[in-house]
Image 1 (tube, one colour):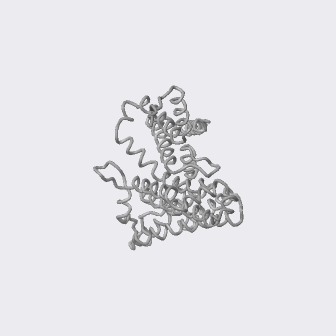
Image 2: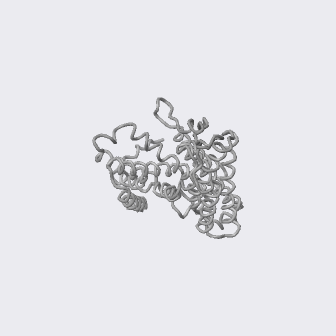
Image 3: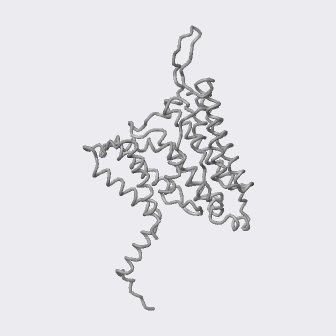
Length: 340
């Protein structure tokens, strides 16, 4: 028996491995995040970017949109889109505030009711998409308008707060339920907020669904080719309905967190959040055509947008300038990630 000498590393082999790494969606997503962080290190505004409190704020500020992005990831993997999540968030915030602040119900009742309502609206979207074959853009656009109108109707066109008029005709603010303070508190010596932990828990649940369950494999199959998935025995209608139901549930959960942060239920909240959620998914590297991607990429995309907004904020860019720069940088990052 002869022993063969170990294979030697060659420049061509190193180049091939480097090229393969460069084609990895995660590598490109991390590269985009690294560029934004390096910009923050350069334009740090007298060291503000180096403070831990700045990074705490980034994690807290991306949490609500990040929760929406978890549900959006499930939908986009199926080659769908959900434009209703911002309005469902508002409906969830109004519903939660109404039950806890106005009706005096406990959080143990309010949270399941709000989550169930969000999941029901999402399931309705999924059923319409899968049964009628209407484009997801059209279905969820109609749902976006409906949910926003329902939120305004439930709130009577105004914010739902703890302020009330007493029997003596004098207005006063009632104490907030403990759930509001708990969701908006920070733990571990003020290191991390509860809402950030909720976001990370949503990331973990989404990862488990996509990577470790039959449902996850079916979601990728539907996104890869709906007809091929159907011919392979995948229950495509049920899978699509579940994907949108989970998106609605995550949106309702985000609404609960939003209500806790704002200490009120605002029917106008969440405007444009659906675009932020889509941007987080796409900038992370999950393609809109479906069949690929994952929530790990979405997490990197959420951090990329969060740090971009923070760098522009601490450098005192005007809002309109920040919006324009954000749009340009997001487009550039997506083009960069499409490297072949």
